[in-house]
Length: 64
Image (tube, rainbow, N blue to C red; front, side, top):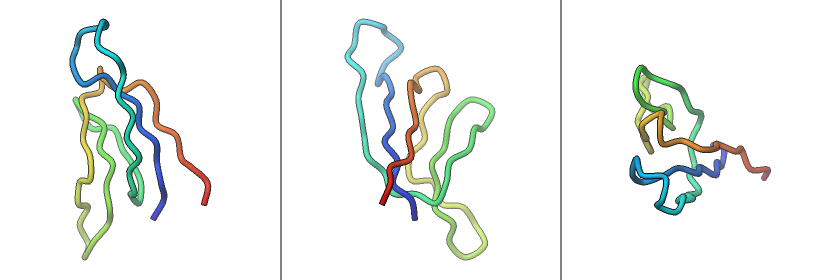
């Protein structure tokens, strides 16, 4: 598993401070309307975190 730092806005308002979370996941993908960080278990992906595409500011893979 990899470790990611995800920065996003919890609401659509630009006046709300950005939120940062560190998540362990196997990868991430962009779906139609959201970004999904997932783990791969038993031939299926299990969502760890999903956030609307318009709220994502940055996804950074962390070393180690």
